[in-house]
Length: 323
Image 1 (spheres, rainbow, N blue to C red):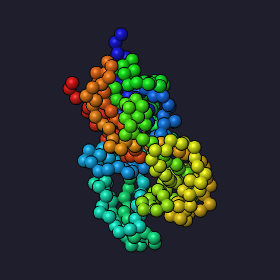
Image 2 (image 1 turned 45 degrees about the vertical axis):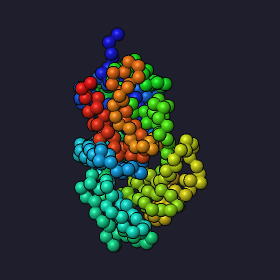
Image 3 (image 1 turned 90 degrees about the vertical axis):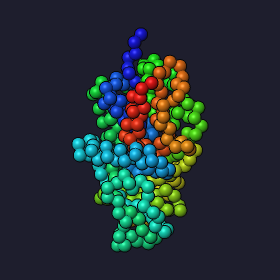
């Protein structure tokens, strides 16, 4: 029986769907195989602001981040649903560090002026970055993929070689699932809890990078605000903790008093797919079973949206390399 597709992507989060679209643009017939609908993936609950959260500098990571920033900027200009460029402030409490490595991807990063900083902060940076509302963006990705002839297959697979059912070329974008599919114990969950509140009129994203009480950020969206958060390595529990939610609300309200009394709209928890040794983006030298080419694209931790399009470009290039 002939192959139904040229390539199959495992995973329907933002990494899987962007990779599938890039493969389509390279003239491949593509299927996406996923155990969960996109609306139930970790990507669906991401705050989804361009920012390489807890990501170590590597030249290739900066390239991925830059390519992704530029692609989102183009999508904003094209009116893609859920994508906007949002002014952002990063506040620091201690001595001002060197300009962060990822600043090279941004055209407008500047040091905050004295009148833009108040105690307990010592300074920080202002910049503009893409913000993505995943409840609108993931459906757009999926619809764009389908409109170009893509097929979404809802199936749980237990081994990578099962993907040969659909295509000889496989891209593994399974995120946290790669821990079992690849036996990659470097992949661990990082629990992130968020609180969603009604937006009282804020439009600037704010990060308190050095808060000793915990990870703190405020990300406005079109109709609500994402308050965060947590970065709990190795925690699998996806049930929102009331005490954690209360702590998030307290920290964020201390940061921006305008949030006081904002109605709480919901609580969300996602498990970021962290890989201790960094993103795995490579062609597997020994693909299992009858897979002719296997490209891995997983382990993005909290930077999936930030690196998605750059990684999709790199994964597509690996698929296209001569065998």
